[in-house]
Length: 218
Length: 293
Image (tube, rainbow over all chains, first blue to last red; front, side, top):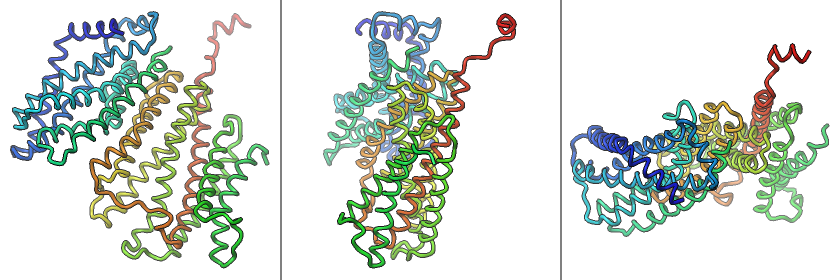
């Protein structure tokens, strides 16, 4: 498992130009959202959490689709499945690596959000927790679907098509929690949303791990 | 008459007896047909028997069988649906506050039940397919996903038609509405996935996995939207619905349930026949044929 994770992280480190490209894509998406709303600073601040998560969601499809790209070249995935480990190890290695990359991406998008939408917060620890939980919700089903769609011709279309309806609860909870952190939380509503995110993550990290073996079997 | 159909017919008959005959008789003053069972329990028995009877028809093997059971079921569905719609449109009184707009409920509520039921059948088929590796479950899964998607789409349209005069908007972020929309898109995605995979083995397994994952999402979506938008309207229960309203509702529920089952059966049969040709060994090439001769 550690080795699988190390392999994935090494792979991502070697293709860090890809990460920069995804980050620039996310940041430019954030820039475009503000054009869609207009230069009203107050409205932008209110929507900032939603925009950030949409930007992160759009960028995540690129990251996730890319994560299985390398395995499809030279049928590397088949080679990995021949190793004397359970396919679950491969899945969790990949999902963890994707998760770490998405957390990094989320943290990188926060300053962009602060600058563009004037939506800062001093509660960075909680923000990090929400980003970590939210991206975990994207990464678990996303990695599983990426494993399926990467073997198809029209992978660019199918991955978002399958993933977007599924992660609605995670997106909703993340946006709500982030905007509570950024805009203040007078009613103490943050707790339930974080618990919802944690429950979503727990369900999908376990279910997707169980089902992954069937997805890649020949 | 095929003997294998008998349990399904018996179940449907029991459902219809408790759903209609007993209550209709009670309306016209004849009591005692309900065998002393409380009316709430009667409704539960009726619904359970109807659903189980319809499901029993789905488990009859499709390939090679005739389409007659499905055709009979569809016929029964059309009869029930016509009766229910006639009563709902012309006999039942208009609702006090919503007026005639409320009549759409007679199709809307049964479609909602059946859409969720079709998705649940799809989920059950997906689980069975993954564990049993039997192709008939793949065919049934495809059939029920497609019928469920059609019903969910109709549901959203009916909801919008109802919402415009009642709430003043086409769409509202009500938990049930939003969940239906999310469910519709999730299952549309699975149908798209099925179109793009050529290998039948991968197609079956992947769409079964995707169906399981999407179905697990339903309660999570429902509760998250409920927290997110706490303004939702009171759910109606048999106690809050007047007796004049439930007769067309029940007739339509039976009608749509029968139609749904018949459609799933027919659609699953098409999928099964298609699978049969896909899984058949490729015809021998001419050169090999020559050697064989």
